Image 1 (cartoon, rainbow, N blue to C red):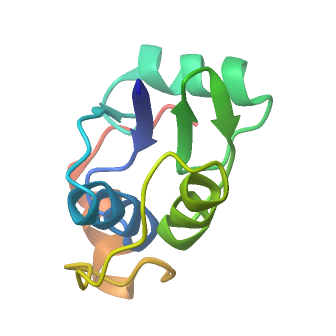
Image 2 (tube, rainbow, N blue to C red; image 1 turned 180 degrees about the vertical axis):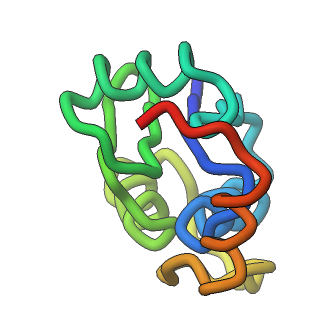
Length: 111
């Protein structure tokens, strides 16, 4: 399975997607859309919209999704088998105020 995740370095939604990838021990490409304009542009082109996270699984784009939604898709498509592993981060949570502030002060914005 080829997975490309278009994520922010520090974001509740993005950390939720990463937690699902770890829960199922999945290999994936973690593409930084905040500090890399080309990655952001590729995400927008492929997903048809500017919101993140976006996760492409074997060519199927899940746009503006939570980790919970990514997990539900993979279970529905039988790409993974349900397990009892507890994710290391909330899988359906927005960024905290502290995460938003960190992104404003330490990252380059392209949008």
